Image (cartoon, rainbow, N blue to C red; front, side, top):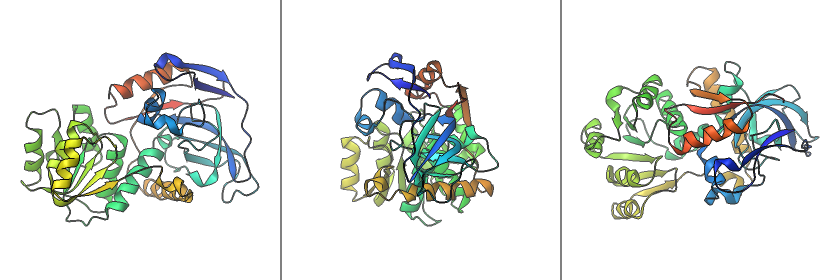
Length: 335
């Protein structure tokens, strides 16, 4: 099979095309012919050898994709050759999703929504499951006041979609570019509830949009200096939802002084206890919401086919934060 491999940690020039053996599915695994792969910020963190690189099991990166089941192991239940699926592979497959095929435990997959393309489906798994975990663990009520920091990315848009679909209205979100703000409006968030994080009076604007009140929940999808603002606008005993692990020491100090609860959202948590069915079950719930038109499928930007240039372009765009509310996608066809 064809795959894009990372030959060494560092620059985007370390990727190359390779011919690898076709993986063979184990008893509880499926062999999937991939049709589309989505790019995730964790990809470039792995490429650079940062913390996430410790999870790598293959020199082929890529954590989420869509495709068609072509073979199943003897213990696989509920999936058959020919099924269209979406895949939350993480680092658990035979290889990453920058490839034409992958084997994976069937508990990490779900049937693709019938009303969207393979390319749109590939944008669902990582962002969707992360947002679902945040939404369910927050356990907020409809009167809760929620700030979402850096909301135009995949997780933020999914989380807002879930909140709106369940009747939540007191949401304030931050986004930078006009394109990112427009993306939030398209999923149903009113313009008055969107704040430009580049504005010098950013923190004051956040509170103004919340009727000059502090928030019950602050969801941080950015980290760094903005994590400090996310902590500052949170009320005493509020809940800080950390999806980045990039909060500064100053932010942590503020949260401690206010007696806030820190809710860490980790995509690896359930796999650590081998509760792998959570991933497939969660994907299935999200896919049902999309098929029922209760939430919109993610907006995407298809960069190209399976080649080194597409991967390099995606990594550069992610590192420069030039996504503008759209998930980057690579279309995969058998070469």
